[in-house]
Length: 197
Length: 159
Image: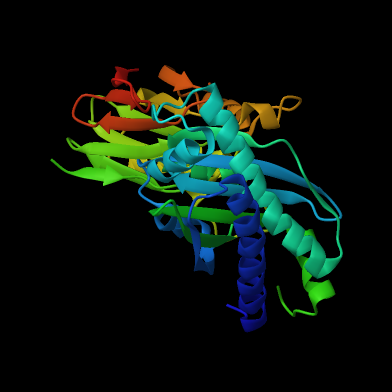
């Protein structure tokens, strides 16, 4: 992979995760919140699903359409247990059920995570990026993953930023999937002075 | 018994016995082609409806227009007769229905494209469980042509 592109993704991961931590800490006030340095990867699309987890593992996927100066999609995928732990912290509901309240908390959580990265990218490039209302799916990882890729019409490579954090002492794993339209990725590259993105 | 897992864009085949499995069908469509006399089974995992010029190295099974003829060719190579082939389909869901209320989802486009291409080669569809908004696991038993479909938290159904 191009060095400059990897550096850019790492920087985006760091800044975006920083924004997300601040926003989530405010939401989960009083709970211990510690962030592990994120990892950014560019993956061939057939391998990406394995990276995110077993195909049959149940995950929560939050998917957003991005419009403005940069078009594309962003997604946030996390294992079911991590998602339910966050729901417990956010709502106090410890039933472990995916009810209306849990879905709305997950939608809000995904919104915060994704817009944190979008805002970071917006600041780095001075380009406007507006997120849509989030879609939420609780389903097999493989099904969520391929729906995200097909929805964004990604046919080759995909950027996955894995974040790990601890909320109330429990490890939470989450994956931010960054899917800009190719032409707009080129636009970002030009603005940031990166070659051959 | 052998069980082969068919990933996005792949086409896998078995003769006489064994299981062809696709885990985690969302908007993709799983296609099972079967010749019951020759006991030849071919499974594809179609990702998008139409092949594109900017993806020349793609596996044929990634797209419906190239995948269906490639699957037929594979079945014939293993001894199937084209006139005896039957198809079963699963998948083509829309997992995020609130994001594209005003357009036809990729899942539905995939189902339409797969059905069109099967019709073009005069292959009848003998079973299907498609669309909706949930993911599916599809298992194809080559010994007898049985196809089961499972959603999370549900018992398998036979199509």
